Amino acid sequence: MYRIIEKQDLTPAITLMKVDAPAIARKAQAGQFIILRLHDHAERIPLTIADYNRDEGTITIVFQIVGKSTEELATLKQGDSILNFAGPLGVPSEIEDYGTVACIGGGVGVAPIYPITRALHQAGNRIISVVGARCVDLCFFESEMRSVSDELHVVTDDGTKGRKGLVTDPLEDILKSGSKIDLVIAVGPVPMMRAVAKLTKTYGVKTIVSLNPIMVDGTGMCGCCRVSVGGTTKFACVDGPDFDAHQVDFEELTKRQRTYKKEEQVANEHYHQCACGKE
Image (tube, rainbow, N blue to C red; front, side):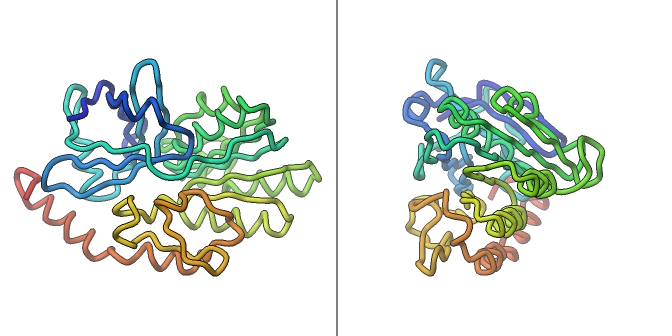
């Protein structure tokens, strides 16, 4: 059992949990993820590591309530325990001194982009960060991102915080200005990552995206996270989650995301109909 030692509601729909997991914390690196299971009847949930503290022996996860499993996870309180918490999984992000790196985080993707940004900053890179959300109520980690960035842009779809627009807007302005960007890393919803990839391809800037949104099993056995990268089939959980954005077949990826839409709806309805919230 893995004890929750801290819980914060970052927004009405986004929750942070710090979990006591010293063995994972000792090995965790930026870009990796964990798989958790609440109880014997729960599904496996892959979540990118939002932070880790080797001294405390803790792993921080951040998740948005989007369905049955995340809604149930959000009911846990400080002091409660999670049955299974496995990791670190996945290939760590490649961290080196590239020069100037643009780190783009959209929605809950701001959480996993933070440790990557921090590692790149510590490696000596000049960091330009762009974080976006639908509205001010869904913004979080601004101070954390500012602390590891040389330049930070905040955007919201409705303009309730920062600049009104999409994360691609300030990125395009920077690219149009002629400022040199050596690498772009984007983490967030698939449509956002697709838009970033389309933009940066026009300017010939190497871009990396994280494809954890399509994971299920997390170990390569279920095959649900198959994705075509450069015409070759890859598994997001064991070959990634980071991939060359300009080689990803985003059309196929978008279709694959809808594979279990009906099952997710049934599970959510069952959870709300069941008084105890469990099978």
